[in-house]
Length: 270
Image 1 (spheres, rainbow, N blue to C red):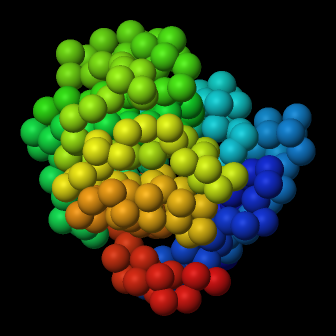
Image 2: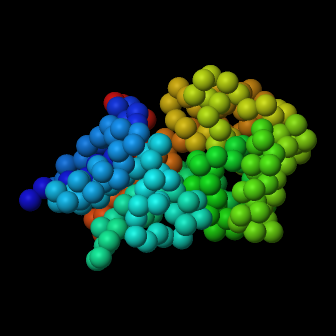
Image 3: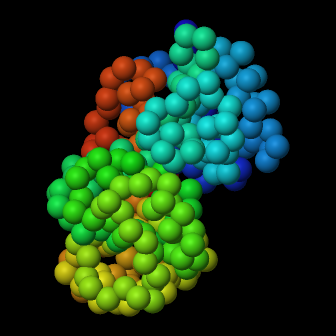
């Protein structure tokens, strides 16, 4: 019998997840069907209940339902707990386990695909929304020297720092940034409207610039970073593939070769 999986989102038509999981299935010999499903803004719980009641085997969750998924599941892994958001749901005895694989995907992409070690590194994260909350746990787990969160609304960044209570974590106003960082992660949505974060250019000089979105949406930030001396500027396609590999592993008990799938997507995005 074919095992069924789905990603819930709104919008969701742009999602690469069906193709990614199709490639994982080919690699591992898994008999699965994976679809993207557009869910009404008030319909997450209804659709999740129906999907699992009809024999569904696992759910991915994208915007804007990650917090609704966190509220719905019966238990969470540590990263979902830190983020207050779930992007992968796994059926377990007596209920559903919510996981967040985003941060693990980011860390693995940096390490495996770009050769960047976070250990001892000075890291700047731009933004303090859900995308940033979702990756902070694994980033801290990778032993950085420090992580600075800079957000247009300083109080929001400070609230995130206060919530996690880690001495390596601090908040700073974007306009007060000056020194260069080893790694600058753009976790804002500025690229979605072709804009740039308002930060001094010297902070990326000689370092790695990473945009958590991918494709054309990441181009403004990556081009800007390259123009101002970043030694490497990359988008978040590898993060997308690596977090999907984490989800596939949770569902299927086998980890696919994410590097091969990333290479295939780079060569042919659709």
